[in-house]
Image 1 (cartoon, rainbow over the protein chains, first blue to last red):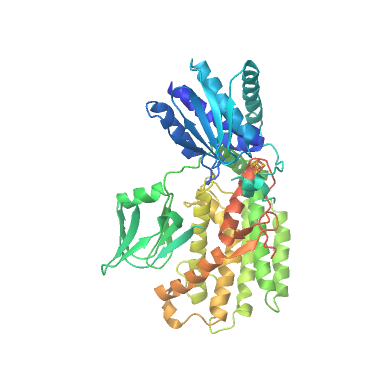
Image 2 (cartoon, each protein chain N blue to C red):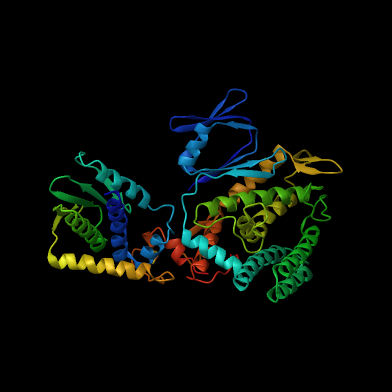
Length: 170
Length: 326
Ligand code: SF4
């Protein structure tokens, strides 16, 4: 079980990163993290989350952008302060649903955007499951590369913890 | 932005819940803002217990210790958190591969010599020295071994120090570079400044996944964090030497700032404090970075140099040493 959880935590981040930036995924996979990133905070908290299922609700901060509340019985909830990285966050929650399903637990996911006063229900459908499986394959392909994928300028690079690392140039 | 803390007083550093304070020998308490501290440099005689050390480790604070004369003697680095097996392997690979090693070693020399020349150009009548350094840089390109490269670097450095008497306008006269022990004020200033750079570079390396013991220009066999020595080469002339010129040329140093005898010369506490004041403000000075389009401090430039090295090792982008463009 511990191994599964470990895997769930790590892969959750990787799924997120895959859709944020393949380069970030590669660097993270090789242990090249940035001081400021909150991965470790995230990892630790998510472990607590699954280790103590009796606790009703806890907040987990991811990337300083989103926050997951996991409600123990029916649903997994993600509260997003920003809908800027909508797809990565959605894929991440889908991945958790997928993973939980493999463990025999069925839940649905809820994305909350308090700022935008929006709420979205995410459900695992066969098509979505296929998306997740493809994403896992893609992760393997990306992290299997020998050298980091080159920088591709994205609108959120300036906010990324790797910005200086990626853009320092020579 | 987090700062370095320099402590001259003697006393005991204690932890009380989430705060750290120094209790000086006369009973005064000084509290530290631990959230904004990067490294602590201890110059005084300090007692510390494991409770305090554990707290520093938790806050990821590095402690550098200096001896009675103000020279670096060692560091307390909390358990390494940023580890990357992959990067370590690549660091070693680049050391073992002669060509790769020479490339990096040469790059550090190039950065160092560039900044030496840059300093000299600020002053009149230094042209012949600048040219001689250029020649050594030319020679350095064709070196076949690290020893040869070290030779070029050493000769360039001699030329550079010879020019100091043209730059320094005061009673302080510089004869030759002597390290242990320094015998005149200029040597004392250089040695003190170099220890500060060494420890600061080490703190920055520590924040990355680089392993500080694997180096290219210096031998990893030197019983020090030799990667810190490598990167320091670039920053000594950029940061330390202009401080020395300023302190001397503006008559900021007095006799009582040195503890001097025929056999040695050290900075006294007042001298160290004057140096550190300049050092600290230099490190916090920012410049607009032309590639990043952001302001970065001199201190952060050191970290950026680490990033560039990591990128080189990861075959992401070829390393080119910093050459101050401003
Ligand atoms: S700065 Fe941009 S390219 Fe670099 S890791 Fe972040 S998102 Fe990717």
